[in-house]
Image 1: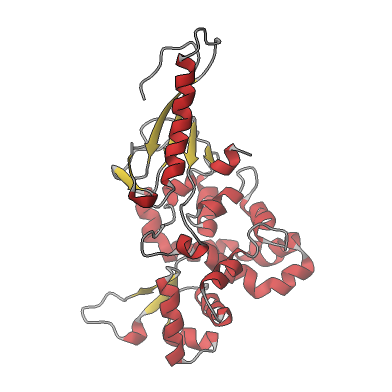
Image 2: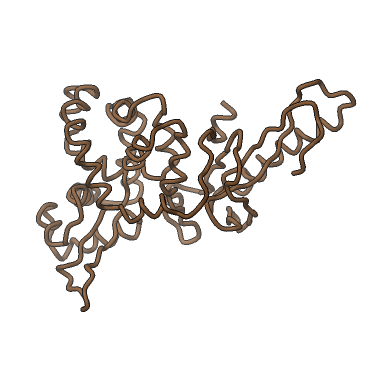
Length: 319
């Protein structure tokens, strides 16, 4: 959109496009600002200081994004500062379609994009938040920049009133049956990659039944197989399984095994007694498990992105 000759300021508004976002919402956001600009031109004497808007669709890479219903948007790279970045909602008909579908497989944001949710946080705080929330916008939005990581854990993840306390439980029960066996597998993998024989022993599941559950978790994108680098085809006993979802890893490492204790002592004491003493070692485990993705995201070869960016979602704009 061309810059307008006005007495008011020009606000640069970006729509963060991603594959699977709602095409109607993204187009509607652009239309709102276009109508606002048009309305200014129709006023014979616009008030001094009335703002105009310069809009663009941006993305982390590529020239286009494919939104819902196969609609494509041309995108611009992050080349300049924006006054606000608006994230359109995801298009889905159900929670199952949101997490996995043959038509839309929505990938979480990488570290660089996830860090934009907390532009004023330090590099260490951003990394710690990413190791807990991963690249899921819903989880990142709940972690407030004005709180420390431990304070966010206390307010967002611990206690019955916490927004994300039961999130993994709701999520897995929507997708799976016999969740108790899946819970035992995920709790075993939360401590690091394991071969199937160790998973079977820790989860108390027979070897023959175990692979069915592992295949189900892999199909949902929660776990994957890690093959050793050898000159020969690796044997089945040498293949290790890894828990990929950072939020599930944290929940099954700290929260699920201690739900009774957390209910007894409360969120604040649970943070001090259960989480704070082990958090540094846990982050080391997270870095070792995904350092190739983390480092590649930091060394993406792209220009440094703007720091002073506010990220909004539609429900925040209309609140």
